[in-house]
Structures are given as structure tokens and as C-alpha cells.
Image 1 (spheres, rainbow, N blue to C red):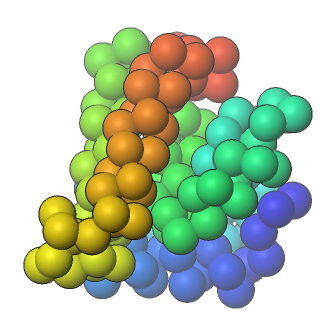
Image 2 (cartoon, helix red, strand yellow):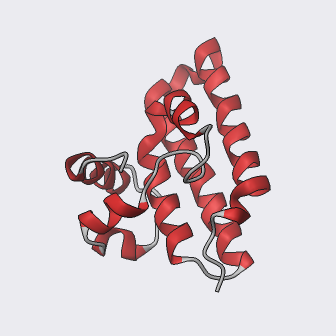
Length: 133
């Protein structure tokens, strides 16, 4: 377990406030079920996940809906949509963090590249963690 129920409740509130693209069932899910499912940025059980979670610590609220979508699963089209929503949500959070001057801020531009990398990583390696039905 990486998250406490209170932390996930905050992430769920942030997702609502920032109008993230999420499955409706994410908001209806029992918080203890989310605690069991959500593992942050990176694949469950990967030795890299703790380091990846540290690198993406400001974007944890984006990973919880993505983890939920992977848990719910579906077809390859569902996975592609979950990954696109993940990238979309990361960019919403990025805009909130860095505001209107984000394209002038070197740190913000570095973070934007990390978002591109996160999206590429879930597209390349996420199939191992998606619940295909």
C-alpha cells in the first residue's frame, strides 16, 4: 500500500476540481478499494516504481485514475483511451503548477518532457499491467 485513504481522497477531489478525464466509477469506488489498487506512477511490483514515484511526486493525482482504469480494464482501445487520459490529466496538472509562464520556465519545460516520457512509457510497457478482457 503506497497511499493512505485520506491521500487518495485528496487526489480524487483534485481530479474533480481540475476536471480530469476519468471513468465515472473512479468517483464511486470505495476508497479502501482504491488504496488496494492504486500504486502511483510506474508498474505495480516494478523495482523502478519508488524512483518513478519520486520523480513524478507532483503528479500523483493523475496516476490514481489511470490505475483505476487499468484495473477496470477492457480492450486495447480502452487501454489507449486510459493512456491518453493519463497524458491529458498530467498536462492539466502541469498547467496548474506552472501557470501562464510555463513555456518560459526551464523547470516547467523539463517537467513537460517528463510528461512526454511518462506517456511513452505507459504506451510501451503498460500492456503488462492492463486488465485485458
